Length: 127
Image (spheres, rainbow, N blue to C red):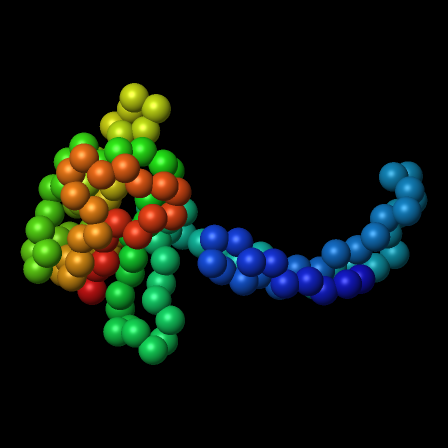
């Protein structure tokens, strides 16, 4: 069994890989692999927690797909609630709501109406 570190979307995962020689042969060892649990809101909104050297409760909302920003529903400094629509992202002729995963204040908006974004582009910072 070999251990590897994999970097995916700026997060590092440690995995164990076991070589299997034959499909019909049973493995004699078991893996101690622990799966990292990610909440559905983090997956849905592509939320990224900031490192410890930043303000502790900051969250960056990143673009879950490439597209165009057709509307920005919030302003910097505005108080928001969990589930509130922050902006509308149009991708493949469908409008997608980007919602807040938490209560907080909008501390920074990195895009404007009409901007094109790529997967992972940082859209909004919430404190």
